[in-house]
Amino acid sequence: MTSFIYNSRAQRVVFGTGSLAQLGAELDALGLNRALILCTPAQRAQAEQVAALLGPPRVAGVYDQAVMHVPIETVRHARQMAHALGADCAIAVGGGSTIGLGKAIALDSGLPVVAVPTTYAGSEMTPIYGITEAGLKKTGNDVRVLPRTVIYDPALSMALPAALSVTSGINAIAHAAEGLYARDGNPVMDLMAQEGIRALARAIPAIHAGTDDALEQARKDALYGAWLCGTVLGSVGMALHHKLCHTLGGSFNLPHAEVHTVVLPHALAYNASAAPHAMARIAAALGSANAAQGVFDLAHAHGAPTALRALGMRAEDLDRACDIALQTPYPNPRLLERTALRTLLQDAYDGIRPGN
Ligand SMILES: NC(=O)c1ccc[n+]([C@@H]2O[C@H](COP(=O)([O-])OP(=O)(O)OC[C@H]3O[C@@H](n4cnc5c(N)ncnc54)[C@H](O)[C@@H]3O)[C@@H](O)[C@H]2O)c1
Image (cartoon, rainbow, N blue to C red; front, top):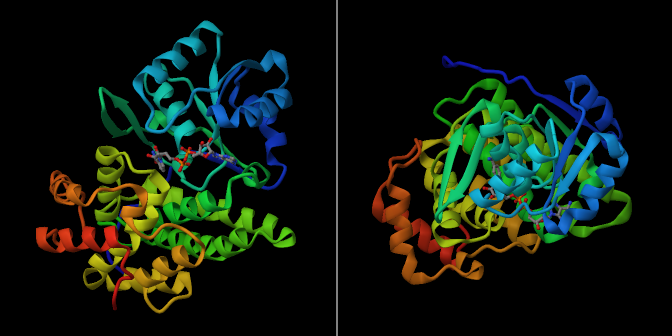
């Protein structure tokens, strides 16, 4: 056993089918009376459902303009609306984009956030925020943005399309996988990471199959895995995989969960020799002989993209992506070598199954 430092975070998690019904009691416990409900345009109906559950005096309004990458204009607009309507908290109903908007509002206003996640991205468990201004996404880590209470109700994720469920689940697996070789890792996070990967690897095939009697349990497993993996992301550092995904998503505007899905097998293959214990744990949790191949096969077998070119990446941008990824790199178990990194990106672009 090596030395470690473990920080726990004060956050309340309410988990289970039907747990959304406890939202009012959870606001009472926090002393909150008037919520601005946040959602994307596509999830307006779910946000209205939450508003109806709370009843008019407790709902300041519904703001349905959350979009990917949290543009500063949207943050300002939502913040003004919260102020004008006298909201004393924000309830984010949705995935990482909506929860990201709640965090950005909290950053300056201090307005507490209650999160009701409907994807598996895991943002609700992290103090990490991102705001896009003048085309640049600024990210930071601030405990003020951490949602106070998280309500995980699998019923709300039943409508998440199967394709997005698979990629979102692998996005969560990526948080846990990198947590297992994080420089500041610890045994508690290792346990959560392995259990999170195991839960998602069990859930993804069942969600993809969509068989009615197994689906509800699979949605529960996936959300449970998302909670564990999100907690890992919020507690220990990220490495090469997240750096590559932030580069490809931020500078080349590729879709978030899909990029994670394509890149993860290659980032794991790159780091395999430098982090053998982590790889053994990832492989065991996936039920595979090899961590990188296990992730690749999980994606491929369930219809997820496995090549960057399928996401709209251009071959002529790979060199620039490599350069950007090498600037201000995150700590990584294996030294970052330009030639090896460029090969990684080419393999990810072509969708090649990693070798042993
Ligand atoms: N800060 C963090 O710790 C952290 C962690 C993970 C992701 N993120 C951020 O989150 C964003 C991606 O989040 P995401 O992958 O959850 O996607 P998303 O929030 O952008 O959602 C994708 C789409 O799916 C829809 N959707 C979500 N849940 C649904 C449901 N249950 N039923 C039907 N439709 C549903 C949304 O309305 C949206 O149109 C990225 O910007 C990423 O940077 C941040």
